[in-house]
Length: 224
Image 1 (cartoon, rainbow, N blue to C red):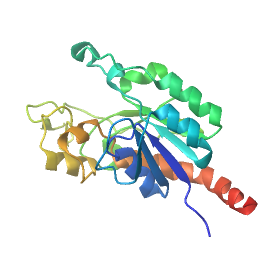
Image 2 (image 1 turned 45 degrees about the vertical axis):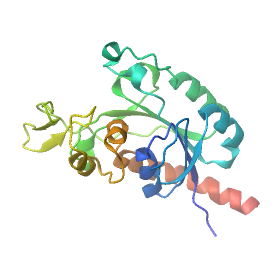
Image 3 (image 1 turned 45 degrees about the horizontal axis):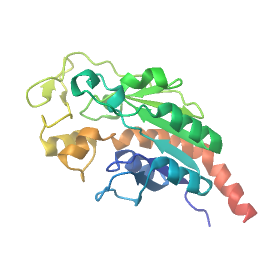
Image 4 (image 1 turned 135 degrees about the horizontal axis):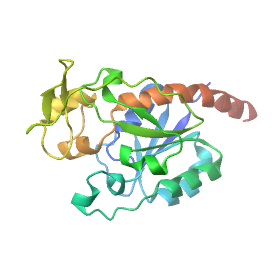
């Protein structure tokens, strides 16, 4: 019997990234310092480093979405004092020897190594929502679909020059049902949606990583 590869979803929030990895075939375990009552998979409320130190040997792939507030272009407006955790997370991940993914906003590019950029319209979504992913082993990113125009409006909704309608899912300037449809997420609240990664992004990454870790899982089972 083949078991599913296990993936650790650190700083998991409400599970946008985790859902994508689950769709790709992983058994997902979420960890966050705050309660996440709508997280759709096994969840542990814990400090990220404590959980990683205690359980890394039980896992096949590691994902982290460290707090993005310190890297956001709006940091100067929000006066955020959020820690910049990407270097510490990378060091901890590398020490395990596992395949890993670190995700963050475009403002974190300086702290990410060879990140690939994913954008909603690459996956047929009605959000732009650029996000960066440092992936080890390195993956080639699919080509970006150009964006012409603006998504800014009082509701966060507008038509771009290509005629398609997109939603800006930030703050509270959007309708929840519109945002859920736009991002491919049907279980989150407004606050959770504003912070979420569209599952399509991590499903695409997860499908590539499956090819890497499936052999390792089979080898482990043979030893057992």
